[in-house]
Amino acid sequence: MNDRWLRAALLAGLIAATPAALSAQMSSQPPEPPDDQLIDPLSAAGPQAKPARSRPASQTRPAAQGGNISAPEQSAPQTATKRAAPRTAAAQTIACTGVFARDSSHLRLAMVFDSRNLTFTEVGGQGGSKIPASVLFPNDPKRRLEVLWNDEPRRKDTRLIAIDGQSTWTGPKGLRLGLPLAAIEKINGKPFKLRGFSGENSGTVTDWLGGALENLPEGCKISIRLIPDSKPAEAANNSDFLSSDAAMRTAKPKIAEILIGY
Picture: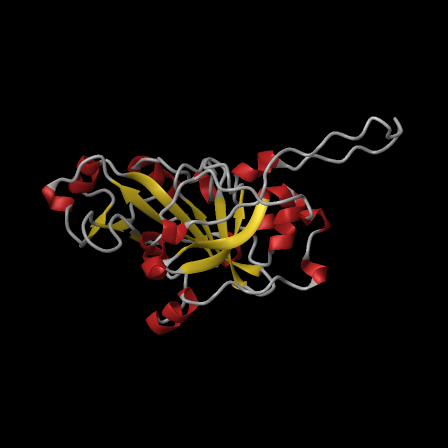
């Protein structure tokens, strides 16, 4: 998580907060652990490991120990029911329903993906601040996912889900990192507006213009940020452009960040 996508979230209406309220939230300390009834019984999986992903000292984040579920002991009866493996295949897709719905929680993530693949920690926020979040697969850059909650003390009620870095997760409607402009237009069903490639919120979508990505189920909202292969002079400013604009076609931007919020 970084300043860029937090500003993008504000711009797209994914975070409904005044600058003062947002500043207060960003400077808050992470909440105390939830009540016992919210703690997944699988959480006692051993000590935490150091994160493999390097970060500036101000944004270093701890990570939970990953790993596969151990095989049943040899002494277990042959008829014993084997413990089901986590559904890691589902880990690659985010929908506005199910485990990533508005009413989801840290506990629900732990039940679906195994608590050993999940940690609750601080992630980098605006101005070098820290924000508490649930992080799936914290040691695997390709499967890492950050989830923020509206109810932080209880770690429930989804607020924002961030796909960035090297993540291979797929968002609603098949959105994924690296997707080019024409493919995004095809998913949306029409052109859309995005900010030019200069200054604050560079490359952020500002309006889906009533397309398919504006009307998702369950009040789900999507914001994306694109980065260009080149920066033609016409697109190197902080104005809004249509995705079908010639300057944008020349820039050949691709998705660099995806935010899903409620």
